[in-house]
Image 1: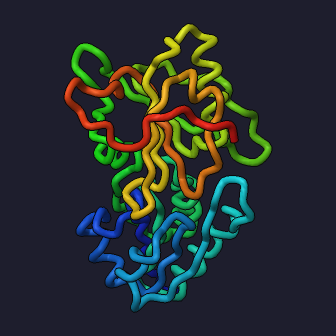
Image 2 (image 1 turned 180 degrees about the vertical axis):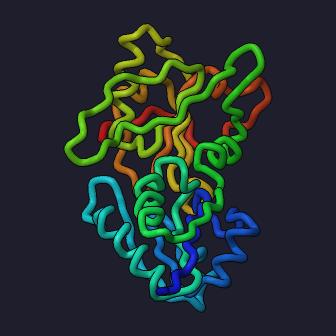
Amino acid sequence: MVSKGKVYLIGAGPGAADLVTVRGARLLAQADVVLYDALVTPEMLELCSQAELISVGKRSGQRSTAQDAINALLVECAFKFKTIVRLKGGDPMLFGRADEELRALELEGIEVEVVPGITTAVAAAAATKQPLTKRGVARSVAFFTSSTGPDQPEHPALPHTDTMVQYMGGREAAATAERLLAQGRRADTPVVVVENCSRIDERILRLTLTDLAGGLEAAHGPVLVMIGEALRLREHQPALGTVAQAENA
């Protein structure tokens, strides 16, 4: 019987190497091979310098490794190595295509374990000191993205919730704002945009919903857009980031 290794789907967190979990860091140090996403930082990869490193980056709107090829490579590595890590930005179970990779591994009878990571929405809330929920104001939160898979229809409907967090929202956020305004959301609804969350080049921008409808300037990294009354500045809160109107892309 052919022996198979064990695959770990590990969440790298939002970017900073010291925000990966203790378990994730331990497994990275033990890995024989690491297949990593485009959003994984060089500092994070230093935690697995002993391993063979394989880039399988996927970035919206850019040429990247096809998901079917990643699935096949994971299976191939499981027959060659003992400890295989699939390192994903944020948390593997949230917008990380984990379902497709789990299916491919399970089909081949390969043992797999998921190690959670800090998703960017939570890290962005911490970076901006803006809780996503607030007693009497916001008791529900929705994470969503406008990105869809190949040959899949777009999803124009927006979630009904108090606080909205749009992943990969750089180019799509203006359309989101326009739809919310058309639905009757207040024009001065607070918006916080975080680019390159938790990294050295992190950028925070505070807007209103009307500002966001005008578009965002070109980004140089992953963008998260948070919308809702819970994001309104507190009375004595320092305004971390830039309070300005967004520029048209």
